[in-house]
Structure formats: C-alpha cells, structure tokens
Image 1 (cartoon, rainbow, N blue to C red):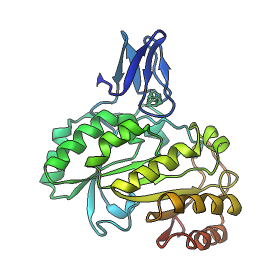
Image 2 (image 1 turned 30 degrees about the horizontal axis):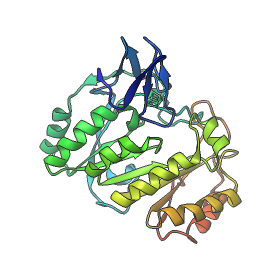
Image 3 (image 1 turned 60 degrees about the horizontal axis):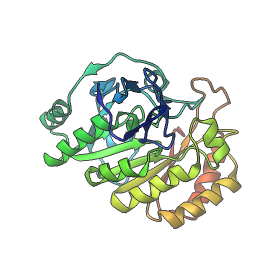
Length: 281
Ligand code: SF4
C-alpha cells in the first residue's frame, strides 16, 4: 500500500482523479474500482506492488501484432478494475480479490532483464487501477533500456495518461462499445473518454485497438461503421483487432457468428490498413 497519486481533499472526503469516475470517497471507503481507499483523509493504492499474475507471453497475445513481432514480453498484472463487464474474461483478478505476491518495481525490471526480455507489459487486470506501481516500473524499465506496453480499457484521465506516456512504447486499448448507454452498462461513462485516450496515445506511441464483438452489445454493423469513421479521423494509423466473443462470467449469449466477424472485418478494412480477427478458430 502507498499513498495514491492524483487525488484532492474535499469537505466530503477525498476525490480520486485517476479515471473519469472521479470518485468521491469518504473515510474508510473505497472507490468504484475497490482498490483505492480513503484512510484518515488520505487516498491509498491498496494493490501497490501486489502482483496476481506474472509470466512471459508472446507479444501477439496482448494482442500487439505490428510492433516487435515475434518477441516475448514479461507480463505483470495486479487486481481490480474500474469497469464491471458482465462478459469479463479475467473476472477472477479484475472483479475479485485473488492471491498476490509482493514484488517491487525494481524486482520486476530485474526479472525481465535476467530473462533477456526486451519489454514489460502491464496487463491481465486493468493497469490504470495499479497506476502507481505501473508508473514506477515503467520509469525504471525505460532507464534500463526496456520497452513498456500497456493493455487497457482506455478509461483514464488525461493528466495521469500524459504523465506516463513518455515511458510507454505501445498500447493495446479496448474499445468496448459504440455509445454512452452501452459504456454505462459496462461500468464506464462515455465512449468519448476512451476515444480521447486512443487519440492522445496514438500521438506518442504505437497503438492497437481491440473491439470484442459481443452479441446484443456491439453487433450493429451500422453503428460499428459510424464509430470506425470517427476513429479514422482521430487516430488514422492504429491497428484494429476484432475479437470474437465466447460466453464468459455472467454473460451467456452464444458466441459471435463467424459470418458477422467477417462482415465487420470487411467494414473495418475500408478505414484501416491492418485489421486482425481474433478467437475465430
Ligand atoms: S481509479 Fe478507482 S477510485 Fe479512482 S476514480 Fe477511478 S474508479 Fe474511482
């Protein structure tokens, strides 16, 4: 646990400024992500240096396809999330309290170096909610010549994003829905929050965007095309991943039809040069 970055003190407790929820948190309470707590008028990051998953993955698994292809990446995750998606694929660490081990940023960087790996990914659960650990590790990794990759839902305020971007080489950002009501149902707020992150990040680093195509949530081809048209104007050089949904967690709609995935790929290729399908075999 360490004191959090990005909060202010208010008459009603503290206000966390890390993500667009901007939670007001009273004494002894936690924010919506459940990993930032007001203790005696100060905000603390509860998952600081608490790692739930640590392993080596192919970079393509993040997924990142058009940057350092064929390399392996040292990947770390903690716990907690600022969204609550009914189809979460990592709910055991994102929406529950998993077993963790204590590892410092120095140890993460040392392990990556000792394995001869070129990069570190902040992934598995939403890394925005372990921002302090990610920022410290990314700075240290950058000093040691390692690359940094964030795999995120893109729901982060501009100030913390701008502070970390100089140390980040690539990002995969989920674009989970096409409109504000759908984002609201997933525990977020507006589609603009995420589009702004994509736009800003793509000015500083390599960006790939993943859209999980989920029946009844974002399977409308017309809305999909409208969003891609907008995205093209804001971030023309990004890579697109269209990932096929399978039933998970609290969501039991049948898997997305393969024909729909192909139709969406055809639409996406009208706007972007690189479009990949995922989970289709
Ligand atoms: S990071 Fe957590 S506590 Fe902070 S605003 Fe977002 S959901 Fe609320």
